[in-house]
Length: 319
Length: 162
Image (cartoon, rainbow over all chains, first blue to last red; front, side):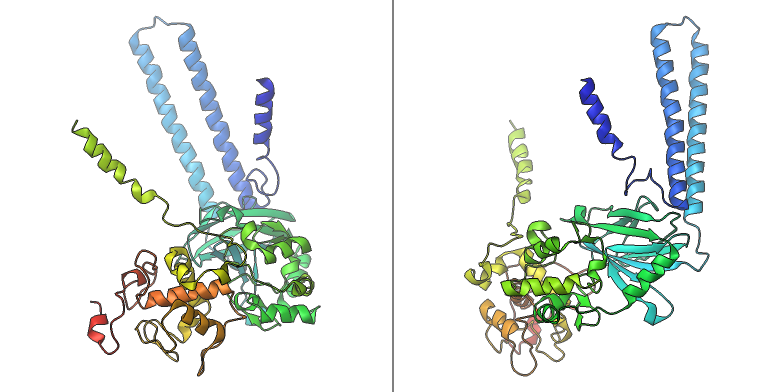
């Protein structure tokens, strides 16, 4: 029995750290939320322990005190309960006021659009030549306020990177926004937090927080058009159905249905956090996406066997 | 017992929960060539995917909703190259003179069959329980599932729905 309990306890421990946990805050807003979480947990733990002690005491020694005394105790407990509720509500309200403050200006604005089942990210800028689109992986500079504008292309999704902020829904026809910043460099994982269909569980996103210089280097890399390392692979991409759904800037492929692949291999994951970005995983995904992510909009394209390796060479060069 | 018919009637309400159709995420190799295009019309999933592809591939750019800007309208029963699902699939796959491009290398065979099934539903040729339901945005005509089988050409009155 004890061993069983120990194993159960270990399973719970998994929630304590790692890339996707509210207990591992990576920015001031997330710290606020974690502080609120511990505040609630501590107060409610004290309430629970006091309640249990009172219950135990009353069971152990049946007091002969007159009823009026008992009624006073109950009345006092009810008043304290009400006060605690008021305090918790106040704490929650105060935290929300800090979290959902209006924009001070100067944020890095990223427009995130939810799709079944992947994330489109558009880095906005007043200068149109500095705008670019990527997918499933956000890079953010540390120390700078970030604004994420959220909208959806189909059903309701929810943007949730627990290390940075709470959940916010992506709703059709409405633009929601959240603002936060990351204080430390690191790789965080986020996930869609609103059931959105068959592959909801495979709709993750990666957030890479990095020092401003590294971010600028990444940004100028993303702004550049794709480099075709294999002319034959590019031709395979363009002459097959790939090009009608995907964009590769600089190649002529301009489909807007699937994720932008201009710098595909610069990302850590494939198919919205489903697979690690390796040549083998990419080959498996292209040849038979429906066995990896059933229901995803990517169809199995009948490629000639001799076309697959040139295509992989080309895609691997998109860094 | 008076209760028995009531309970039976209530149980009957559960019947709609029965599986209507099976969705094959990963068709067996060669399904595209071995199955007839008409079979796609029997699966609501395929017809609805065809509807999604119809706007994704910008078919509505030429065959606009009910109007037809540079291509013919697809909501009547006037078919230049035949109304069968296979004929429509061939039109999409190979293209036709005077503007219709070939989608042979732009869409998979599966997608072409799904598009053909949807095009037939536009003209009310697909059973109403598989044709797509209403849109999220406003449309000038009823959803495909409520379209009547298209009226003879020229008889515009029969086609207009209040």
